[in-house]
Image 1 (spheres, rainbow, N blue to C red):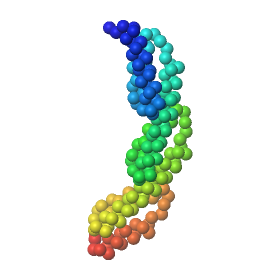
Image 2: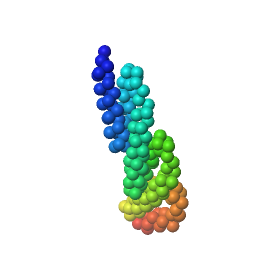
Image 3: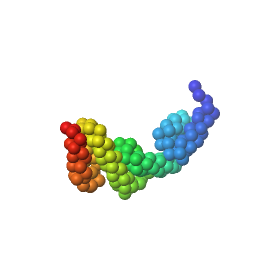
Image 4: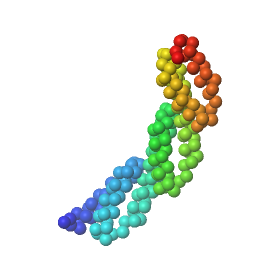
Length: 171
């Protein structure tokens, strides 16, 4: 059985670790260290609720910045799936931090869908030039989804890409 000195040290170490992880925006590592600190505090009969909430507030605010930055970076690269994952985590952090990020989310999504649209149109044109009709159609289908999400009209570009495939004898 652990002594109270060992448990005290475990409490102090885990609160310190939780704060370090919180400051770095590592929300899951912070939560894990806090859960161990809570167990130690319970065994010692200590109330650490104030310190826990201070650490959580720091952690979720920092994690929110991390995940919004990650989402923006992925958006600029047209990596919509990674962008959406980062935004989903950012939403969870925002809820924990008591923040509304709907404006940031809208701006990041607009950038991401426009970039994904561009990437998929380029891919479709490349596949058409290689005579790869199935791959071209897959890229065009994705481009049409992003065009719808971003409110962009691309019917002329789609027709031009399909015509380029037909002109070289593709299906």
